[in-house]
Image (cartoon, rainbow, N blue to C red):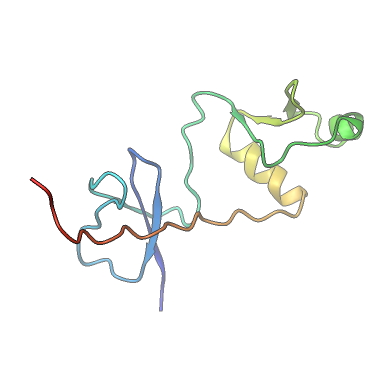
Length: 115
């Protein structure tokens, strides 16, 4: 059974489904979602650099990090800054890290509408 990923371009939300026959609606905004043929990852447009809070390092590790990853900038808060998808992915692979898609909490049911 193949799992497919669908992404909302407005909200950047991804859902997994095995069905590709019908149009998927975004659980957040209700808009149409597109089939993400690139796989699990949501690729940002990288128009602005991505500062990763999750990959922040301790200040004592800064010198070692700059030696190991000379092309990855570190900001004042010791977060790596990524300017493109390729650098971001190669950084994660070199650090033996795996991106996991976000879990989307299902919407609750409307019991009664009030006028």
